[in-house]
Amino acid sequence: TYGELSEKQVAAVRTAVVRDAERAARREAEEAAKAAAVADGTIVPAPESGRHTITGEIVSTKWVDSDYGGSLKMLVKDDRGFKVYGSVPSSLENVERGLRVTFVAAIERSRDDELFGFFKRPTKAVALEGAVA
Image (cartoon, one colour):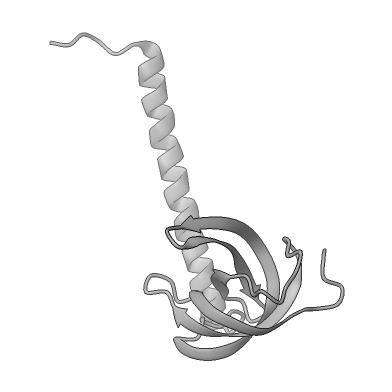
């Protein structure tokens, strides 16, 4: 009733189906690799809750605006293998990707991923030597 699909539309659908299948396979392989690393102790799950010392490398930073003003956030990959996300401590200046830091913060594990957590109220933050890679 609405006509025929063009050759380009059919090609686009085929490409999308292949791309989605490849993404799903890649995601399953990553999840299997994570599970194997956790099982053999290479990667430690993020702490469930409480104050912990985090030592690791900043993976990324970004500015986040909210109704209460903006703040600089960072994603840190801990040396034990898990990642945590939260506000950049005020004692750190000129944070950038690759900087190694250590700090103490309250951590809560993500409900969706045991290798990811959120931190808040970071204190005692220090940039480590040999910081930028």
